[in-house]
Length: 122
Image 1 (tube, rainbow, N blue to C red):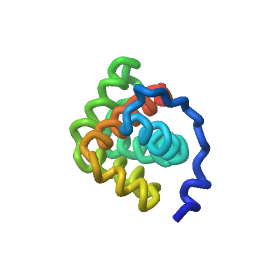
Image 2 (cartoon, rainbow, N blue to C red):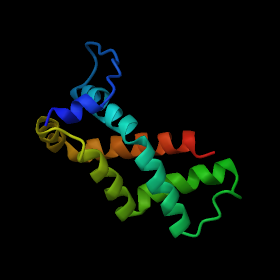
Image 3 (spheres, rainbow, N blue to C red):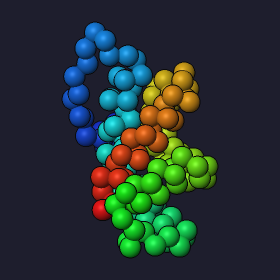
Image 4 (tube, helix red, strand yellow):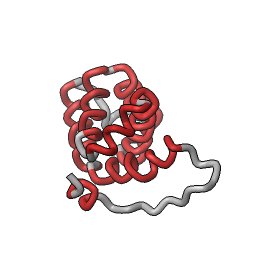
């Protein structure tokens, strides 16, 4: 299972005494997984836009951002697909950490994905 870790780029984000365990997990696991899976997330979301028949390209940047936020927050199937794609890249130990506070980690995954998609979908 350690091969999954070798696929990821180490981001070497600094931790301080005030860094919470959730932030450590976010920086050491979630961010590298999101970076690794970026092309898949973009492809999945682009396909989602087509399936929704959204006139995404003609929309203003603000409307695009609102569409991204609402899609990932309100479409349970899309949200769970993204979360599943992320969890699928965890090691067993990371999965055990994830289970300690899965609601918080899901919130962090979706928040980071929203920002990631917004920054790349112009």
